[in-house]
Image 1 (cartoon, helix red, strand yellow):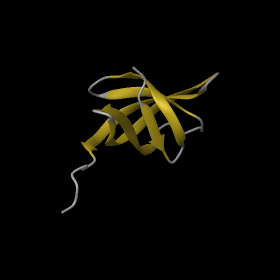
Image 2 (cartoon, helix red, strand yellow):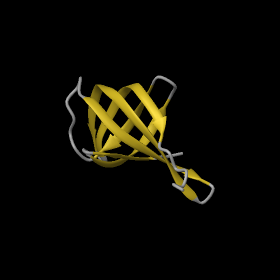
Image 3 (tube, one colour):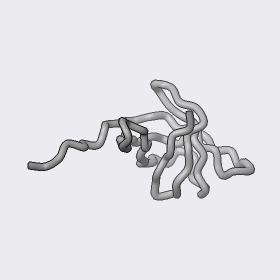
Length: 85
């Protein structure tokens, strides 16, 4: 399942993910070693749930559809979607 990735480097999608990291594709080049903040946009009961992530770029790989980014997750948390009273 592809999950949308939104960052300051553009919008892309996941290609692979594990507990410690992930590989995703973005439209813009990112230098190895960069700490990157991004959101994973997950489907949830007809809505979208955002998982806010920080990761360190381990390596990049140019491809036909964009720049592949292998990143080690540093932190993550779900965005609060509870309605405000």
